[in-house]
Length: 420
Image 1 (cartoon, rainbow, N blue to C red):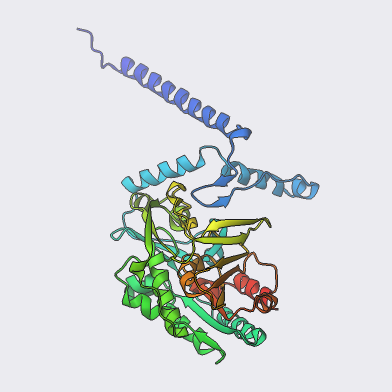
Image 2: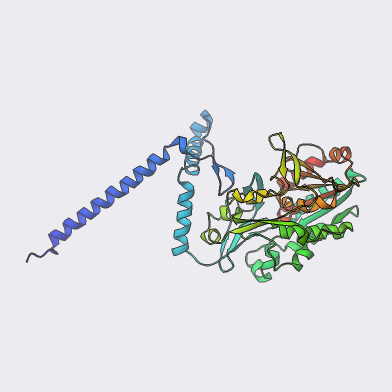
């Protein structure tokens, strides 16, 4: 019998195998190259990352001769590649099989100045710590006291200019305050949120009432008060902060069980996007619960494009939204200015909430405590808060921010801009 394993046959087999590998690799590269040239199929928005993707650069001679033009084209090409998100998802799945199973600290590009969009709202944070055993991601906050001082001065300045209106301030700690040990917080170098809140509140003038959301959140720390895949608190967490506000104002909060409750499954938030679609988070999505106000569920808003429209205070159909956008069930997302009129209350009571997106889940609970609830998102509002309060004869003004805002200069600048 002929020996099929002689050196000559083996060498021929190896050559054929090598040729097949070369042809296969070349074919794959050609396919990816052709896909990359499909200009008409390139996405311009990332659903997972909730942001607009890089636009094709405009030609200038300066950028051309410096080489920057070609760098911008390279960034555009990679950022808008048609198969980019499926490839990221596949890579995450592979890493979950072969990669590091330990807890991960992820610092997004830009470190403490990293941003992520959420339903049009740009949020800022220092880093993400993913705990694999609890299947939870935490925003890690690095405080800057000098920026805290600017925040304090802005709130005190607002109270001084607003005259007869009663000014409240609420700063909301982050999830890790209620779930991680002090050793774990120290391990990642995160700031103590409670210390920062105490510092800010100690600097407020007597004309500003500080709202102690922390004590209520701590008392309910074992409940679902923050998301695991997103940096926001849940509506349940916002409710306990509403209870704290009512305590500060001296009114009775509406019991939680009196609201109609709705729930939307399959929410994957900002942490999922910023962690390159982490497999642990993907396999363990959040759900969004919301509580429908009793007095009215109708809201009028001026959108970022300047259009006047109406939204539901809590949109019951948000289950049809994509996994990334279910938080948009609250007050129609982020609009420069909105108004809710509860006709079941006829005492003329009014409040304006000055907020970023943390305020979205909070506002619905105010509806049954006031005849008029106004909402200003200071990131998009280009008017004067002083004039707005005067023209609408507003009783109460609540500044509501999650703690990262108080250490973010751009956000403080936006707050300062509406109270000048």
